[in-house]
Length: 405
Image 1 (tube, rainbow, N blue to C red):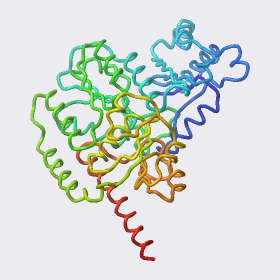
Image 2 (spheres, rainbow, N blue to C red; image 1 turned 120 degrees about the vertical axis):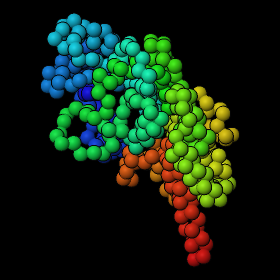
Image 3 (tube, rainbow, N blue to C red; image 1 turned 180 degrees about the vertical axis):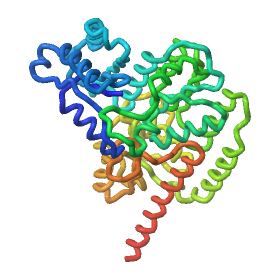
Image 4 (cartoon, rainbow, N blue to C red; image 1 turned 45 degrees about the vertical axis):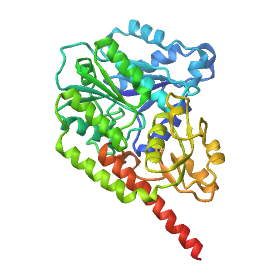
């Protein structure tokens, strides 16, 4: 795949920078290089030339076209431009072109990701004979490559054949390829995505992907199962029950053992969480997951700040939940025992007297291995449990040391 941003050169550079800092990998993204002239007179020709050039030069299996705030504000009809490109270049008819509207003034990372997934499932899957063991997984934007890999392995343990759209577990997982490519390699092949129309069920993880699952349900009659979270004992129980219903078999014994370990870990560490004040600033889906997990462990949620307005925020276990940014985080987090945010929350943590920061979401660029963190399933929940408890424990020891001195 090759991503093509219909916008200015600097916009694509910013996107590559943010993703490269997080995943520590080069990001394949081209630009239609809009200039002052094209911004005034329209960017149709730039887009058509850009698509043609990337296909001729790089020979991608699929081209993903996304838009910037510049081209959306101008009102460029990208869909029509792609139709005209098809008419003028019939020799490229076999190369799929997927278009997602992603202006930066609308929504946040989570909404742009959801728009891309919706565009993929609207364009590529084809109708066919149902595959009895095949299930389509739509992973949320908050899941890491390690998270996605764990979800796949859980499904396979139930005897299912998961098709993951998109599958970053073998694309942005930090491996070394034999050759260097200008394309996004790994992931799921285009032909596999086409088979998504033959799945017996769709499992979407994260409320923001409900529309994408609905597209598959409407086009192919595939029942969809949605999970807001698969972090936390009750949430993972629901995942296990859902997969058990889909396959018509009991939960494998190994997951019962993992659940038992998680229960023991919660017993061992619960005293670290009791009455700790926590402030969170995250994308909507991840905010719901982390807020409920920490509140369930006994923390007091001082404030929960969402990047965008999404459904389900009013039901969070706190009286102080709103849409805001990191400036708001500085204002409402005074006196907190823990902040939960991406790496850009570190300045607020420092200004507020060195409050510990649990890094979550994207980008996380000041710590290594963020893309390998696994916080889903029974094992992943235990990882998150211990990581958070150790932060609380280390901070308590530091406070005791300062008090003694």
